[in-house]
Amino acid sequence: MGNKIFNLIVVVLCACIFLSFFLFNKNSASLVSIISSLNIYWIIIALFFMVIFWILESIILHIITIIIHKSKHLFTKSIKFAMIGQFWGSITPFASGSQPAQFYAMTEYGIPGASASSILMIKFIVHQTVFTIYSILVVLFKFNYFKNNIKYFTYFWVAGFTFNTLIIVVACSFLINHKLTEKLLYVITHFLGKIRILKNPEKRFEKIKAGLVNFHKNSSIIWNNKIVCFNACILTFIQWTIYYSIPYCVYRSFGFSSASIFTMISAQVFLTIIMSCIPLPGGEGGAEGGFFLIFGLFFPRKIILSAILIWRILSYYSCILSGSLFSMISSKKPIKK
Image (cartoon, rainbow, N blue to C red; front, side):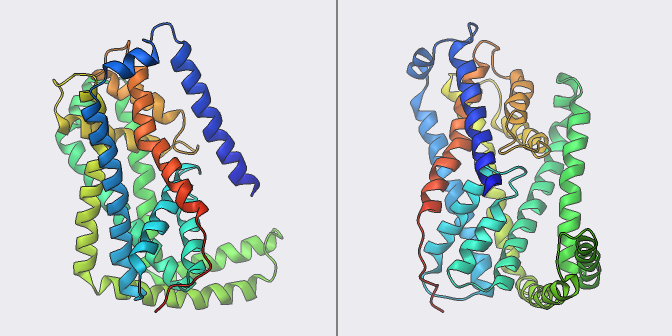
């Protein structure tokens, strides 16, 4: 509970600091004049894109879930699970709170723990796989452009790409190699037992081992439905293309049009790679700094702080606001099978 409160404090404090800096910076135009001069049409499109992003997140989670846990009225629950993930992912470092919060919500509604963990692991791997492919495509077509225009860009990209690649390698090893997963969990549980963090490591390991069997059984069900995985990957690609287009909407709302949408999407992909390495909720600090560094190629310096603020409200704080509403809705009624 203490960690949750601390993360919320970090998010609120960083938001207040940035907003204050925006309001009182002499080099920035006033907030009122900027809002009044924006093309609201593009802001509405950006908001619409966020709603579509959330809907697709729910659909992707739903089509993976129904393979393992068939039940009635599951789609409405999938929306809740997805938005809970958006909220807790936004207020925890590395978005680490997303899956645990979704796991808790799923088990609360009657989905077995082994099934819930399998669903979330598959969803995570689909996301990371698509993100890796997306990153490679962007690197092939736009890496030299950003490398030639941004100092030390290569170092930032290498650090972020390495970090994300390690994540997907570890996740896939858990999913595919049963023996490796079992050995790793054995080492972890016994190490925690030796340093007196975990009581009865042997007993705990046997419970984990039993759950691991169900986990791999459920995972094999998913992989045997390759069309489902393919559809989930396609939807994920569309979902993140929509999300990565939001900076372009912000760009157009200021009346600019010289940069192409593909270049702006590429910039957002590179920014996401950099943000993933920042150990603060929502990549606070790194997100704003990265935007300033990368999107400074497209926005004039005198208004880029305004662009950052609008972008963060649309793409980040909207997830906290909308997700918090779903997180506060609780029900003890389990899903009917």
